[in-house]
Structures are given as C-alpha cells and as structure tokens.
Image (cartoon, rainbow, N blue to C red; front, side, top):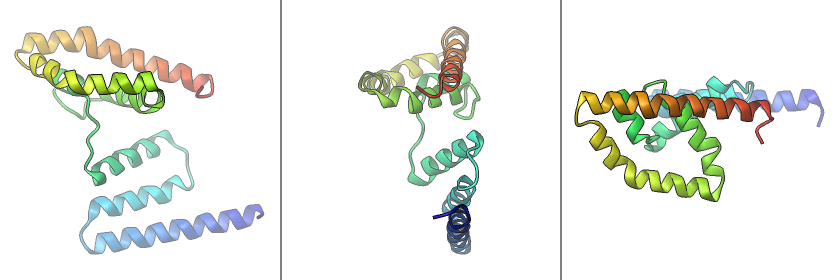
Length: 153
C-alpha cells in the first residue's frame, strides 16, 4: 500500500465519520455527533488538544466522569484547569501500572470523604487548594512534561 492509498483510506474513513456525525445530528444526538467529528479530526492530527477533547467527549457519551473529588471540591468546579494535569497523570501514567491502579482505587475510596471535609468551610477549601491541589497540579504537569521529553517512557 503506497502513500496515496493510505491517504485515500483516511479520506474515506473521515467521510464515513462525517456521515455518522450528520446522522446523529439529524436525530438530535449532538454528543454522539461531536464524537464522530472528533474521530475524523484525529485521523489527520496528533494535536494533544484534539486528543483531550476526544477523550472528554468519549467520557461524556459513555456517561463516565473523570473523577477528581478533592481537587474539584477545593477548586470549586470540575472545569478548573488545575484538574487537567491530574487527570492526565492518572490516565497516562498511574493507570498503566499495577501500583498506580491500586493508588487510583484507594483514592476513589477515600477521596469523597476528603472532598466532603474540604467543602466544610472556605478556610479548609482554601488550605487544600493552596497546600495540596495547586502543588499536585504543578508536579503532575512537570512529570508529564519530563515524560514527554524522554519520549513517553
């Protein structure tokens, strides 16, 4: 298969995804339609932004939430930019190893209780934000950056 055959195949797949998106828009399922639009984009780009948006859309369509209890409670919103590096660290590093997966399971057990405590007052929310969430977010971004510089090892 030469380069033009590969290119033609990608265009065909993109057209199929576009047709699927059109279908889902026509029946009013905008979430699923957007998923197919992003699938088509991912055929032609490796942009981290597109990949992240695609994963968020998959999570939305599948009804899963990217849970980060304590950081969400401290930041006051699940849309806080502080959460993105934490999610990425969990998904791209922790979830890839057995100890990392155990840590995730442990966090999902105790995280809701810690989040409830965090929300008790503006003082606890602020302390957790400044002393835990912001440093953890910075550290996660640093780890992900270094991992990317080392070729994702």
